[in-house]
Image 1 (cartoon, rainbow, N blue to C red):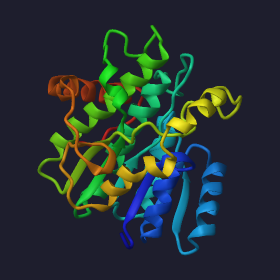
Image 2 (image 1 turned 180 degrees about the vertical axis):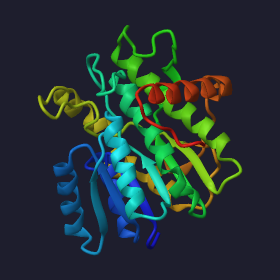
Image 3 (image 1 turned 90 degrees about the vertical axis):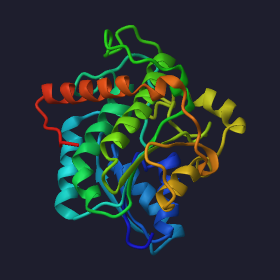
Length: 285
């Protein structure tokens, strides 16, 4: 991993931070792309206490804002000539219907749209690297998800409905991305980290959700344990393009709904159209 350039979204805590620490310890040059730069800097400082030689940068990237994603990608492209791995790690769960800056339902907007746009903006850098990879964290929750283009902004809101939908979108995005990249040197894979103790369902401003999280914590993996598959996929050369990986770096067969190539293409086209409608450009893939 020595000198490999890696971007990890949402690496100011949880699985992302643990992934950043291990990869930096192995010599990778890791950029923590964080909505909250202060928390990102705190994570960097904490990692440096244990790994003084770690090469870590912190950059602002709010996946709920296409403007922010565009600015981050532009800055990174100006500073760096290539990219070895993009780890789309960040994720949110909202207990009520919320919208992003660009009027997407927030779970889909952050978990899927933000990463979709970021990936397309950074692909030119990935294409310049041998055996590059795009690793997108999904979840076994995709099995209960559904993509309803009649209600794309989830006016009929439900917490589980919204989260599962966004995780299905992650898998479908990866399937279609892998198809489009099959003649390149870039691989796209998705990951189910397992049930892990992170702050994804906790409101950092109000503390809402903390009590439930504390009750469940003994039954969940630690963040370091949950990060192992992402770490493995960032390091191995034995990737299967389009694969869905579970604990221990094992591939897992996807359910039929996640192998619906027509739906994957439709989701890609819809995502592109919605981003273009908001005045942003999309890199050809």
